[in-house]
Length: 161
Image (cartoon, rainbow, N blue to C red; front, side):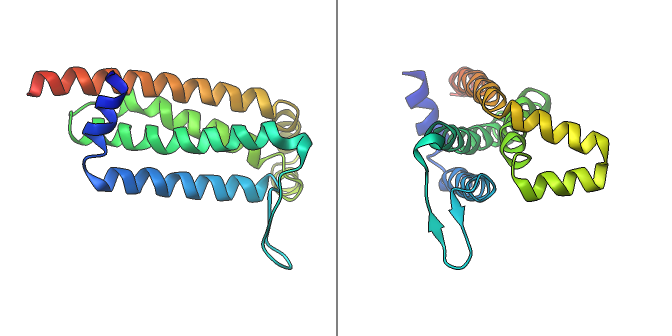
């Protein structure tokens, strides 16, 4: 019940809905390109192989939760006058989820290795090996942030009314 109330409160202002949709689309498209689900050359092709279905579902989940958490966090900061510290952990989860998929791509991995040397190679290897667990951790962080945001928004809005 609390979660429906939060969506009604936050998304009654269309700019938060547009923000959520924009973040979802940007994150989904960029992670899909990096994870090689979307190919841009010679024509635009979208393909999810059977062995990568779990990774695709994780990308969709991270993109969706990132859009929702970002709009809720912005609402908390602007409307409820909450601090950035309490909302910042959701952005941290989004960064972990995006970074886990971005560094496993070959071209980005080679760039990181050439720019950062041994440290870049180690980071790329770590993110490639632990890509799925890092995405699951980021989903857990985003879910926790959503729960805390929803609880805070419903509590503060009841006080304000």
